[in-house]
Image 1 (cartoon, helix red, strand yellow):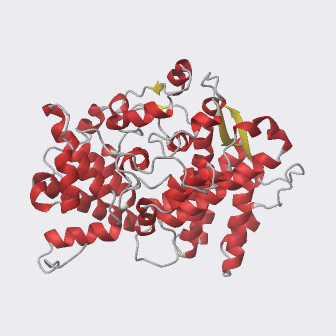
Image 2 (spheres, rainbow, N blue to C red):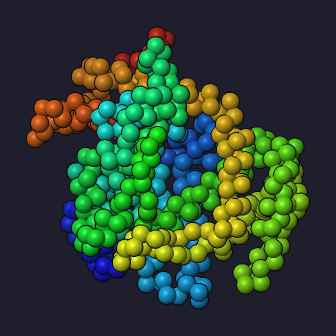
Image 3 (cartoon, rainbow, N blue to C red):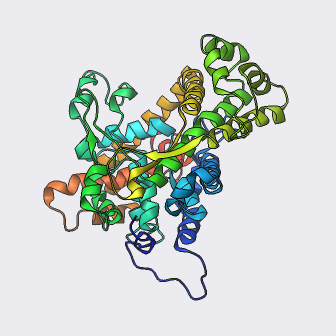
Length: 461
């Protein structure tokens, strides 16, 4: 592994203030927590629409839970003798916390509906993808510095780089064309047909070059290899060790905490649960076996079901806690098969096969009974259409409708660029502006423009 001093470098050199005793990763975490992008997560949809209830999770509370699970995974590795040989490569608590807290800051309003909408609008100009936007906010957009965003350390940037390849290398334009009805209104399409490739943006190549600056070139080539896919977009193959810990924490949280929300709000009934597991009950039982090595609490399908559908909230919470703990103590570290020499690029954290099977079962029931619920999909579509129409208005006459501060950025976006790149650069500014909106801000902005009885010249959005 390259020495830690190099991984603590920032794109813009910033010396510590006098008397500051924090580590560089403490500074990363502090900057993230105090950033506007992080605060906005409190008003961005996780799964269910904001305003439906004050109970369920937003992007902010989800990110906090991911950070807690991420720290739990690292603590498990640190305190388990069987992972002792990996201790020198593990992230410290401030670093993994910062990576996990930051993982969703690039997501636009209205969840994946907003992501699909912005990618649809930007598909000929570099696309849009939430994880790519996270990297962009950290490295360029946030107002902590003039041009370098939060100016994080290289290792933090590596930890949030989930997909180490640019849009142009992964996109399959034919995938978009094959699934578009030319006679439909411009805002009407099947969401699946306009999903973006998982990538970073071409114009953020300088951030990625900075991340990999001191890594062996052969390692970088192996790590950034692309997997071909004839009918869809191409995809990347590997994530860094820190990123796999964050991604695993995210997957665990998504599977279990969204399940908890759905159960508490009555979106999954015991009848639906039992019908779903009718043919899979034996799989569930096989997973929870007495494990003296890890001291796993014994639980079968029947007892988990009884706890999850208890009328007492603390009993449900105990069941969710049991499942989270089960997964954390069944995380392992393995070689990822990339052939890289540097341990940060060659190692991955993953669940054991049994634990992953359980996580997948729970994730699938949330997806089938909650995410695909027609009411959830209708709300997502409404947000999708709203974002597209907002984009169309702002892109058609930006000098008329953009807020003054954003208009300045829009005007400067073409500096030092060839004429053929001007349109894409200015559309990216509009895309950044909309992506940074909360659900509520986007709705009010839309109403001010489109709804006759809404808005006033004295409004301050």
